[in-house]
Amino acid sequence: MSWGTELWDQFDNLEKHTQWGIDILEKYIKFVKERTEIELSYAKQLRNLAKKYQPKKNSKEEEEYRYTACKAFLSTLNEMNDYAGQHEVISENMTSNITVELARYVQELKQERKSYFHDGRKAQQHIEICWKQLESSKRRFERDCKEADRAQQYFEKMDADINVTKADVEKARQQAQVRHQMAEDSKADYSSVLQKFNHEQHEYYYTHIPSIFQKIQEMEERRIVRIGESMKTYAEVDRQVIPIIGKCLDEIVKAAESIDQKNDSQLVIEAYKSGFEPPGDIEFEDYTQPMKRTVSDNSLSNSRGEGKPELKFGGKSKGKLWPFIKKNKLSLKLGATPEDFSNLPPEQRRKKLQQKVDELNKEIQKEMDQRDAITKMKDVYLKNPQMGDPASLDHKLTEVSQNIEKLRLETQKFEAWLAEVEGRLPARSEQARRQSGMFDAQNPATVNSCAQDRESSPDGSYTEEQSQEGEGKVLATDFDDEFDEEEPLPAIGTCKALYTFEGQNEGTISVVEGETLYVIEEDKGDGWTRIRRNEDEEGYVPTSYVEVYLDKNAKGAKTYI
Image (cartoon, rainbow, N blue to C red; front, side):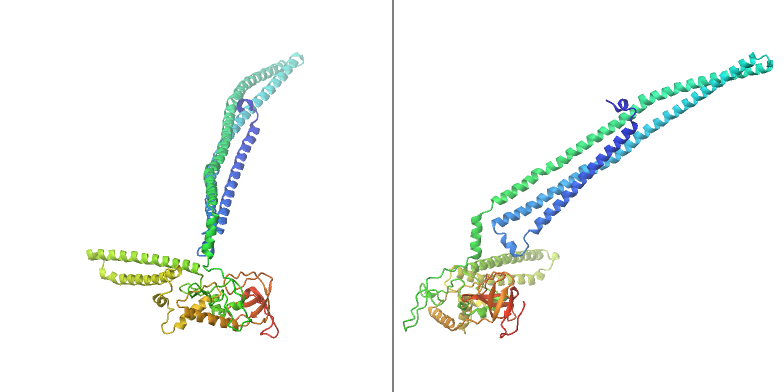
């Protein structure tokens, strides 16, 4: 099967077919190129997606990734980055192994095809010239033969005519002989040209054209093989990344299997456990007796155990159960946190103190390492004075030692508070109180006032046990007096919740979007408004979360926040 023998007369069709083959190859190159662009775009979108859901540093989201479910999600995001990387590898390999190689091959193929068809056209032009020469020689031979016949007939006519002179007959005879000789010469030339043409034609159809067409056939078959190899490479590029993609998916499954619901539940306990005990039963208060009414078990002055008062709160009750809410509202809003974290429940306070102690210990270790390094450098300077002046390091060494001492004192202070919370000490020692800046020997009432503020803080604070029973009784009596004397504030208007607000701190109240409540205290410029839902529920909400409608008799008219 050869194009040279089977398609000897299909020069134009072969030219069209080979051009079509090149067009198919270029179309495939374009297809692969667009595939690489899709892979790059997909990889970019995957990376952007993973980046979008990555936890932001130093944010609340970062703390949420303590939970195993969130860790698994973070692992999934990381694996998606690797997954995207494999699609980038697909794009790179297809570009280098297919697109670039085929583009170079197409250019070579075009040059080769151009060369073969140039040779074919050249052979066609040569055989056409030979054919024209043959036709010209044939026409000349035919013309000379006709002229010779006419000259012979004229001679025979003159020879038969008795009226013609002998000279005219001789002239006609000579003219016929000349024409016959010319015809013989044309015949010989025509025969020679014909032989030559037949030889050239045989060479053209049996040597030149078969050779050229065979080369074109081989070129076309190489093109077909090359596009087949490129298709195999196309599949292999995908196949090479399948194990790595499978590994990424296996890691995602592994991360999902590592989710531990029990561990997450324990983390919730550690995060929100207050350390308070549930409130006790409320005793019956008999007002028919003229004696002083009995204090209930869950009142603030109730003594538990061995005469030690513990102040417990039974969740959200009336707003007037917080007699010192006005004192603590400013610190609640401004986010002020005592140094000893006394505003937190016991368990949360213990965690914060432990975290602070660990941070201080790390800083101490860092300073000690720096001190050791400076000491070693000083020893080197002492042994080799040419390297530096040892005295130049004394100031730095003294500064580091002072920092270590400060950090140790700070650590001791927080360790004392931590020991108190963990129950290793019965109460806060005087030394710890002095270190915290909250002990005043000349005015012990100040200490009691601070403790009292902490006990009644609306942001989830807890009660510290008093070291003396007498102080606890005085505190309880004062609390009950203020409890009895405080009257509910009258409503000065209404408000509508514009957004949902979850009041997580004590002293605040949760509201739902669209809910209507009573306003009992305007915003004093600190961004908080005091509202009431009913007689038992009241608290503060951000002023920007509500639309306030004040009564006409109150200060101001209808206000939009």
